[in-house]
Structures are given as C-alpha cells and as structure tokens.
Image 1 (spheres, rainbow, N blue to C red):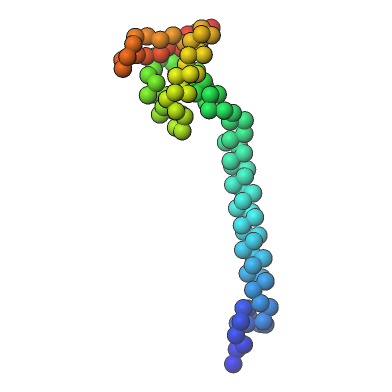
Image 2: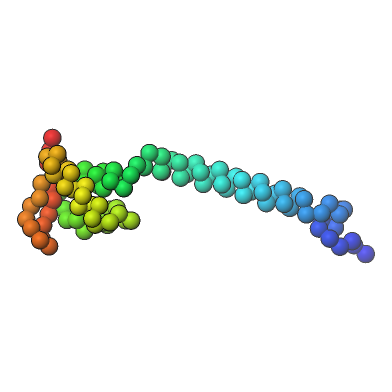
Amino acid sequence: PREGGWGGGHGGSRGPHPWVEYFWGTLRRAYREFEERVGAIGTGRGSKSDHVRAAVLRRPIPFAISDLERDCPGVSRDLIRLVLGKMRKAGEVELLGRGRGARWRRLEA
C-alpha cells in the first residue's frame, strides 16, 4: 500500500515543501507583475488637486462641476470648487453663468 501524507503518491514522502515552494513562487511572481502594472499607471499620480486640475485642462468645451466629479471619482465637490477657484484667480478658467446651469471654460494661455 501507498504511504499517506504529502507527496506520497509521487515517489516518496517529501512533505508539503514542493507545493509550498511552488505556491510562494507563483505568489511572488504575481505580486511583482502587479507592482509593475500599478507602477506604470500610478507613478507620479500626485494629489487630488492635481487630478482635478488635469481633468480641467483636458476639457476642450465648457463643463460643469458634475463633469469633473465623474472624471475624478473620490474627490469631493468642495475640493473641486476650491481648485476651480484657484484656477479662476490665476486666469486659467472662467465661470459662465450662475447656479445649476453654471459652466466653466478653460482659457487659452
């Protein structure tokens, strides 16, 4: 009869070590690949304010704050307003209208 235990069916009783080594090797390779992919995407991502500013600069036509909220998930409306206010003072954007129908437009430098 065959001996029980890890690896007993493949010519010996080596225990769980081959499987554990294989598992850890696979996990390390997957983690390295994940780091490479995240590093390629996320390097230099910057702050949320930078993210909002970049979204504004990508917009060629007038836009609403709600457009920026969709472009910048996880960024509060208050922060978006703060960034737009700073950009307005710097002469980079202008406000068109007031209230719910208000739109912002990027100014060409």
